[in-house]
Image 1 (cartoon, rainbow, N blue to C red):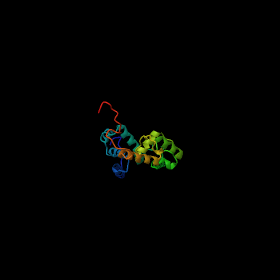
Image 2: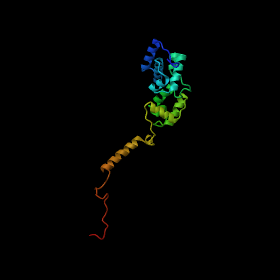
Image 3: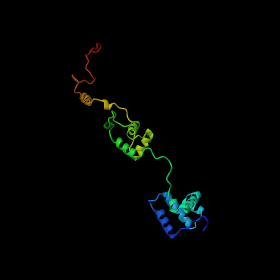
Image 4: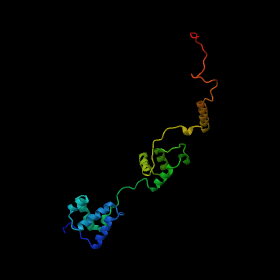
Length: 196
């Protein structure tokens, strides 16, 4: 065995083989388990890298982590960075709100827009995201978000609209026309002097 190889006990080999086949283990950790197995079998770094389709640098790093931390070195370390603003509570509130009519919350409008929903959720949760990010969040949770069509339908008097529809139907059937129907639209007196 070369100096870059690792020594494995029979128990470690069985555990690594199980880890490399388990669907419950992240793919990156499964690949690292294979690197250690191949190194334990005496494969060179370049050969391991070529077979697994990874870089030689990655193979060397995995071997080093195995020597230092064994199985703990195979899993991904927690990623640094701030936690997401839109946490699980925010997402639950967003999904609940977008499925309801805004008038249920006391608003005069009947449709949510991304900026309106952002403002509402900011007031409820204290978290402010951009309308573009809110739209992305909605898409990832199965909501199709479109631009609002401008309409005055919510401002119309329903009774007056229904009366207008009935009158239009009567007009179309010819029920409101008085006098005999003509083929030219309306009757006129013959005022021509050139024709007998």
